[in-house]
Length: 344
Image 1 (cartoon, rainbow, N blue to C red):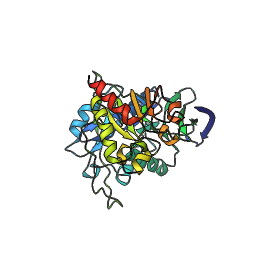
Image 2 (tube, helix red, strand yellow; image 1 turned 90 degrees about the vertical axis):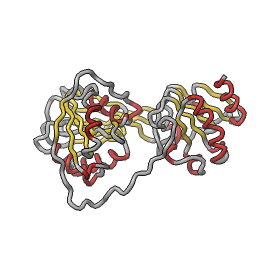
Image 3 (cartoon, rainbow, N blue to C red; image 1 turned 120 degrees about the horizontal axis):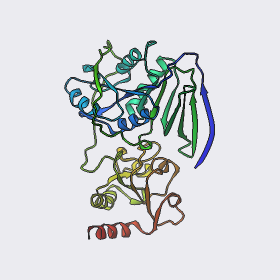
Image 4 (cartoon, rainbow, N blue to C red; image 1 turned 180 degrees about the vertical axis):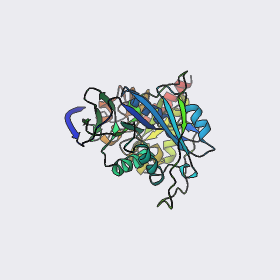
């Protein structure tokens, strides 16, 4: 990987507090905190100051979420706002709440979130409203308390280069999202964070509304957080062959199933299974790439995996350049044999 010494500095004339105080947007689904938000808490803790969580939702779901949140290591306080408008976070309804929390009297020096689909819509809007810069999809963070500046690294050019971005002391509030695979999830703690209720900001006639959410149901682990992932590519011919070949192996290993963009575009798998720059970024303990050539777009989404195993009949396939274990073989012979031996 090429590492650049590219440094960009954002300048804005404000006075800021010396000690970091991060506000972390905690997302949840069906009453459970998202694991990516736990990774955001870890990133916030690396700033070296106080960490406050923000949870929004309805009166029905928030009690269970708050029970989880207050027991997470590193959290000092959990703020929560309850409103029917917060049943599904939308930029138009959540941004005013952030604006109020980040007013001129705000104690917060950083705003942190996972690089989720919701946060990618909300935080840039918040930054624009406050006339502040935002840094997205960071993989490391370091705060220099003496100069009150924060330095981030983030992948660019499909992960082929690493950009270093420094937010100077003149920026009162640093806003950034984190790549969840680059930070471990915050662990539970014995001490409990303080819970504080804040008034929601009601938005009259918002320009957008949430109509429905359609989720892909599966008995397998979630692709984004699974410790083992089996991915297939265009070489699997069609959707039926994709399932018949990969699913038995995934079931045997207790793994999630992924797919390359080529396989998704060809209709072999749902787009929720796509791994890559325009899909999900994963970093499991084991990643098996079966019938995947290894295009740059795909490598950007999985090359941080701990152990990469590739099966491809082309010995010159680019996937072998990043694989820890490579097998040059016909996948339609190798995979069934592997399943048989694993079951034994």
